[in-house]
Length: 291
Image (cartoon, rainbow, N blue to C red):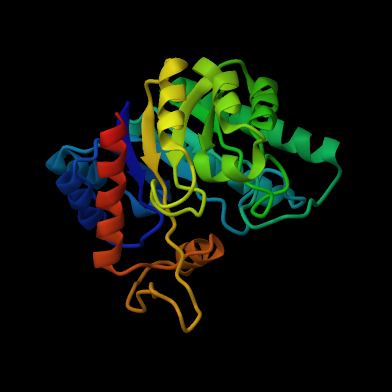
């Protein structure tokens, strides 16, 4: 297994992100699904400069993006968005596109279960057609009930993947499994070879080792099913807003309003460079020790 990290948790120039990953010994980046922010030629040069590979991308399903939305024009736009993400992944030499099908933060449906399922399957089939042509694998990611009503557990992600195509894989996240799965290890075993990506955040969404997830058991179970993908770090350190807060937001942080809102909606904030760098290093050091 190799170790990678997302970059959506802190808006900053990609050069700064990739240099940090290289300095602390990461292998790869799973780049934020914002193709307009990462021109392929320029991004590829940055990655090559620091010896960091692109493992793939993850969909950023902000408001207005979702395959289960009642507005057909928003659904159509989401399909085009996901297809563009896949083109970005292929252009950067990546292998996977991790996809959350519905809007993150939207916890009530627009239509019946049957209708929304049909929209999601039909939309993902069109996305998968582009992925197959470009040699990119799709992984469906379940996330917890407080962020979506649509796909919360591994078995649900498998049902959606089966409806799209037998080549569709699954990505799971230790943080979300801690909330939704009765037995996270059993879920990993049930996915077996279908598991394409594994996201790393502890039970409190902090870096691994700072919550109550048993990471030794997680890694041993991943090894037992022959998982050879990446451990992709995705911590969201909470920025408390009480007088007792030990971590505060970096008020100087800049980035698109939708990106900053997405971070805040995940219960976090933009950490200072010092805090973010420390958490980034602690994560890879902890995982390397387990491997």
